[in-house]
Image (cartoon, rainbow, N blue to C red; front, side):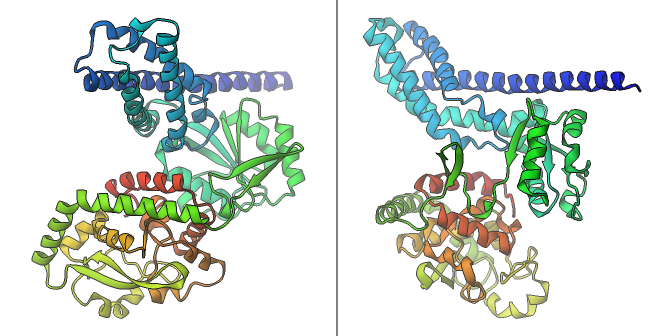
Length: 484
């Protein structure tokens, strides 16, 4: 092939690639708009049914106004751009923007109706606009979550992604992407000048060349996103490669240095053109501690009342299934080194702790933790309770007593905690929790080293919103038995 023919072939591939990428982007946008429109109609109909008891009549004008204003305001809030810009998007991260955007859409409707005298464009009972806002806060995120989790992976072409750096960090990123089908990302390969041996979990991903091959690989494989993991080159050399590539119409994701302590809620400041990551102060203020405690008490009381039938049924099943007490009490290490006794439903035969020493050679966990997936001591009822984390529910009593929180670092058994030293002991600066980052990101699939890193990340980046988000994320994890 001549040089001219080769250039023509590359140009043709570039055009086809850009066309494919644009089609994918607009396909995602169209599906999101359709989802939002349908969710808006459902929310408006719910509001009309609650307030007026009927849907129809002159209210069709308000329905039409809602269908127009909500997507327009969502566009101003860039709620149709995140799926293109970000490698992993969580619908929960959008809740605050959805709250604000729907609120502004409602304000526009009221302003048009009352301010311009277009009363016939509002529902017969204006309070329906407020009820619509409340309904939309639940219906729209639920619709978007379903779209991203079920529809996109089946009907939208996966985003072709290239990872620069095949070391430990690059392989970890690849492994995490592969575990999440809802990201709708396809890793086409790695680039690395001197790659490590690939872990079995990512061994099917090819190494496509060195870092100097970036431009050629992007064109050849139609890469839509480049993830810049750690490289053995100096940062000046890496920047030269990235700047030289141009990366036109290609999204760039960068794994930052010190990623182990940088959470998603980190701030970014601009210092004379230099972006600086702003980590929040480690530790909780007095107001934050009060807020977290009030949140724990209110929700744990409500949960105990709502789940009382489940708790009673579990207790009866345990007593009928095997001899021994209903509850299992065990010493755990809590905040500021305090030891407390945790409440759990008994899931093993009575006296199982005394048999632990005999099973140490079968331990499947790294570090000081003891874990066996097919533990012979687990009872029939206990196995069911563990599958759906129902054995953890009595810990709501520990939350009321102030020994635990709903969300926090995992409370280790005392003899396991004694083997933890160094910076990892910072995890004890917060009250341990029933759920946390370790639960949401893998449950039993999380190894000891990653678990203590996640605990440290949580301790140094805590926020009340993060607690609420982790609690909401825990529900599908438990129901779907991910990481069990």
